[in-house]
Image 1 (cartoon, rainbow, N blue to C red):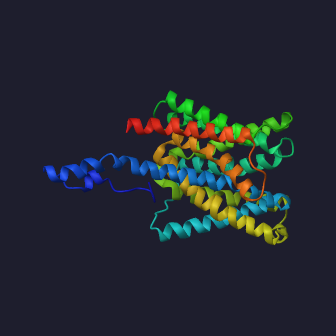
Image 2 (image 1 turned 135 degrees about the horizontal axis):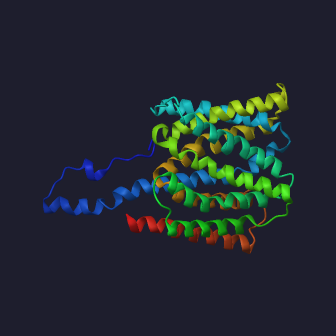
Length: 323
């Protein structure tokens, strides 16, 4: 996987058989497959920390021209990704054939419709309702992800995903909504899952960097068209200083960095196992709220954090036993 691949020490080391070098080799062998997996887990968790911590930043844009702000966000992120990919020597390939459909699907559902659903849904539902919709994603990824990857869902992983979902739901809490709010919450759920599932067929050839670059420029074009149609060409001049700071943070941390980290984790761990890490996002949001001066979490939130930790332990312990 680009950026996270490490040499296989078992292949790089000469096949020495004497007793003296055999002891160090025996100690090193179990670490060889575990180290890349540990890096992938850390990458996915870091991506979700970035996403969870962005809640307070995103609220700054509540009064801004949202489509124009999103177009600027994804445009800046795309330029940054292209520059970093070239500096890192990552090759970016042009999409071909059905790859355009998969990448466009990510842009439409995982980026454009997802953000629209958040905006429209917030008018009919409290934020917790939309948060719970996102929290249900691990269970769907645990079932559909392996099927797209050519394997069968594992009952242990599905159970772990359900535990993480329950824990994330406790952290988010419940909120009030109406029928339209429920519909938008369902759209948020589907789009969040599509962001990961639609990337599986193209991650093999394009890698995390390529998928991130192509989806961000596609989202830039889509949001720019929406911004011109609904907010006008002068909307960018209505962005205030705090708006630009928020857009910059979202572009660099929540988009450019988090996208590459997340897709790297999905490529290495698989969608089902990586999906467990989405439970980290609401925990990060709760912690960020406290760090920004908010009230201490209620006992139910602490219980939810413990349940998320239990689900992660269940899911990733099964990996260590198989390896």
